[in-house]
Length: 188
Image (cartoon, rainbow, N blue to C red; front, top):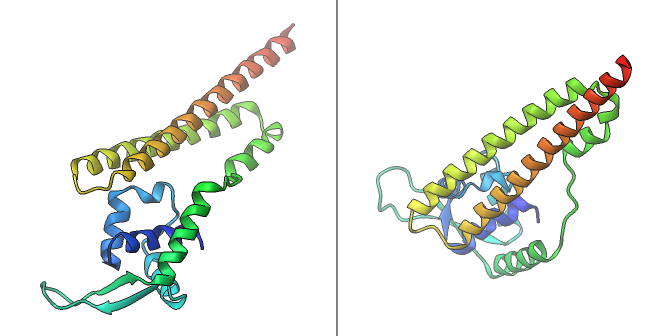
């Protein structure tokens, strides 16, 4: 089960939901900062979970204006898959593979000024992510219906983003010092 599958299944385990409601909760909880779930993939994942027997769907009774919606509910098989997936996720460290690591492995081939400029753009992206997470957390705190564990998700996301930002800034300082040292050695 992918992270996105487990994330969507967990929302259905918490409460039966229709696709648009799942999208709303994903947005409210800032889930896209830690689970790769595109809007268009929600229905694909729901169909996949239904085909695996993890969820069943039915059209809701027409109590509201607008078209009827398909509501998804977790099955016993879905509950078992959710439980197993959740226990696996919180008990097994996963090796991180990111484009940043590949880029860092190739740093020696780049002129230092170019590398520093690229890393500076990376830092701006992290700063934007941090701001998005803080905004989402404030909104979740204002919505007193948000489950208690969501605060911990925001906290971990912020902690990891801030740690990565600090690490990249330190690397940029080292590259700058190294560049300054090489320039000084060339003039001597």
